[in-house]
Image 1 (tube, helix red, strand yellow):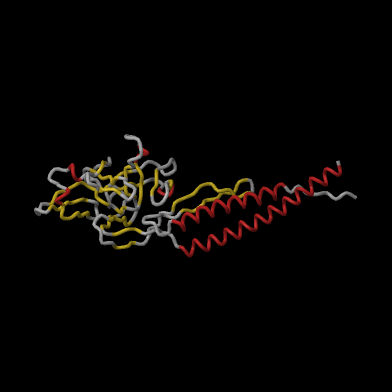
Image 2: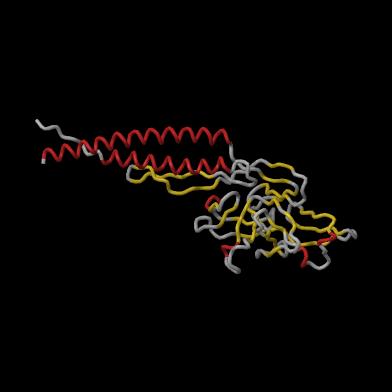
Length: 270
């Protein structure tokens, strides 16, 4: 009597899908751990869907949960309490292209000699010419009448983003409003490394607004938002994924042996 050998291919596909899914998710968790100390970093998670009985990664989503706040001694450190992202212009992008704007929860700034406020990568902070404006412009203090950046005594930004410059002569000059960006689907933003994001089709187009308006959070001066990564949770997840990877790898190896044996059996019976 000839014993019928079942088709091992569905098991092979299931094990292979499990290995690939665990590998992709481990990459996401590794990135979370690598940026656990990065200012303004937002952890990501892999979203999976069932497809023909197999688990497949559909997308990587950004968690917009608030990170802990840390007080600093710098008047050019800013954090957002609530929703929204700071808006920066990337100097390496082509002029006039929408992709030149990038978004971040991190605003750890310094003053350039030309009067612009930039982050550690040289990206220029964007603002609004008035609180009700929805078109961001570059903030350049040197170009504002009445301000000499060599004679600035202090820089103050209130919760609504209004920027005020106090000069050594005691004169205070209004210098516009810091801009925030809101998105229809903020977890649809695409990470560009560290704490920087760009818009995507899934995130939708940005709405530029002042802090405290249109659902945007309040601005905190002299504060920095820390990463929203719980290292213990990520390490436990990494262990689980490693176990899943190993289990699927063993199943894949076993199923491959079954497939080879089945092929040889069919060849003998042919």
